Image: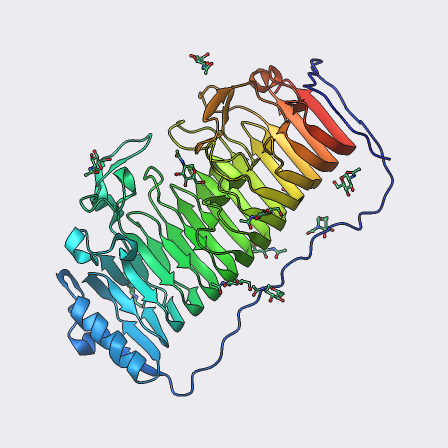
Length: 479
Ligand SMILES: *[C@@H]1O[C@H](CO)[C@@H](O)[C@H](O)[C@H]1NC(C)=O
Ligand SMILES: *[C@@H]1O[C@H](CO)[C@@H](O)[C@H](O)[C@H]1NC(C)=O
Ligand SMILES: *[C@@H]1O[C@H](CO)[C@@H](O)[C@H](O)[C@H]1NC(C)=O
Ligand SMILES: *[C@@H]1O[C@H](CO)[C@@H](O)[C@H](O)[C@H]1NC(C)=O
Ligand SMILES: *[C@@H]1O[C@H](CO)[C@@H](O)[C@H](O)[C@H]1NC(C)=O
Ligand SMILES: *[C@@H]1O[C@H](CO)[C@@H](O)[C@H](O)[C@H]1NC(C)=O
Ligand SMILES: *[C@@H]1O[C@H](CO)[C@@H](O)[C@H](O)[C@H]1NC(C)=O
Ligand SMILES: *[C@@H]1O[C@H](CO)[C@@H](O)[C@H](O)[C@H]1NC(C)=O
Ligand SMILES: *[C@@H]1O[C@H](CO)[C@@H](O)[C@H](O)[C@H]1NC(C)=O
Ligand SMILES: *[C@@H]1O[C@H](CO)[C@@H](O)[C@H](O)[C@H]1NC(C)=O
Ligand SMILES: *[C@@H]1O[C@H](CO)[C@@H](O)[C@H](O)[C@H]1NC(C)=O
């Protein structure tokens, strides 16, 4: 038995309640989701060679550009059939270097590759502004225990705890405002990519970017970007298939793991066993979402101090299905509202970007074994023309408290859509959904600042159909 609601809103005002709306005995044969079993496939190289950039004249002094030496070593290594290009301890200042087929960069412990800070250090086309860029390459990688550093602080015009003001290289008109800075690492149209045992630090803009890649393995590595720098994303995965991210530590200003679709679909991404801190979304699908996303699994992830936890922001007509989030602990809090996010542990929206954009959809979305301590509730919002269906929450605990001094009472639809809207908070804010199952869910409200918005379920407008609540509890506490 399940129950359907057609309600504008439900307000439950008592200070301590237990709500068991429907008890259903049914074994969970869902997940109705086929978990992707994405694994990395690689073939051993026949005769890998090892070349040191110092043999090609690299100074490693951090003052002189070592671009020519590094590029010659990469070219020779690739021509010889592939192998490793080694950076011994030292600091290697460089303009963009192009990683070629068969080459793995081995940046050793105490070695740092430093990205240039001048516009002439990068290619003419803004789309190729990376410190290390692999284009149309196969069997490429980066490892070695050392560091690649984008010198992001050199791009800060004014440090600001709310949000830094950044340099903008927008002379060409190919980009606008503060989106005009170089990324750190790019793999574009590559196959068999592996990045492991390396520290990617201080990107000036996005950090690690995959574009139209297939078969990528990112593991046992760290990303550290400045917490106050906008667009300091961790890993952006565009239009790529078969990506595995595991045992990573990402601590950065903007979205930490961010799949997008611009020119093609994205299939089979798994991100597991990782730790994330960000002033934006820890995991965000979108907002660029022109094509399909299918078969994504996020498992065993710890998210701390973030502005948003798990986000799906579908704004451009793409369809999203078969997505699982499991075994995830989340802490979300408010930051300055110039950053997108309002402390939501989970945020799902298909509201089109603007009046002319197409409406995408999200279906078969499962949240299982999730624990959150958050300053705001869950936000689930389809759109008038459809959008959200078959969403399931299973074994989920939400602990709502307030510990920062920011005001609540704003719903954040940015980018585009309705922007920021005044509305009181709720445990689950929901609109335009067909098919929501909530099972074994506990909400706990701590302290007067959240008890004043103690509203477990806020349905609006009257467009939430086919909801089943099984073993749903909401209790509030003074402390
Ligand atoms: C790295 O640098 C530290 C401090 O200078 C030194 O103790 C250590 O031996 C170096 N490690 C390597 C592998 O060079
Ligand atoms: C470049 O970006 C800056 C900062 O956003 C802005 O003030 C300036 O007008 C832009 N210039 C051009 C040519 O777009
Ligand atoms: C990903 O897979 C889809 C479906 O097979 C295909 O259309 C697309 O071209 C693939 N993308 C890449 C980058 O290989
Ligand atoms: C996604 O993974 C499944 C299962 O491993 C595989 O059958 C399918 O071909 C993959 N899709 C793409 C586009 O590679
Ligand atoms: C979860 O990930 C952590 C690393 O973040 C790892 O130590 C732990 O073994 C993983 N747990 C499971 C059950 O795989
Ligand atoms: C989440 O917290 C629970 C209880 O505190 C713990 O058992 C579990 O291992 C944690 N999971 C992760 C991914 O940190
Ligand atoms: C509306 O959004 C679409 C992307 O979905 C974009 O291409 C278009 O330029 C936007 N239109 C306006 C008027 O901003
Ligand atoms: C999304 O699904 C709808 C309905 O099946 C379809 O009309 C639309 O073309 C799909 N969008 C994309 C980008 O594939
Ligand atoms: C959820 O947690 C339970 C209890 O810890 C465990 O038995 C189950 O396998 C987990 N489910 C998933 C999908 O990881
Ligand atoms: C939202 O509320 C704030 C503070 O109460 C008020 O200043 C603002 O005008 C409101 N905005 C809208 C769109 O109602
Ligand atoms: C209600 O939603 C569930 C999944 O959440 C789905 O399996 C079921 O078919 C839906 N029932 C109706 C009448 O739409």
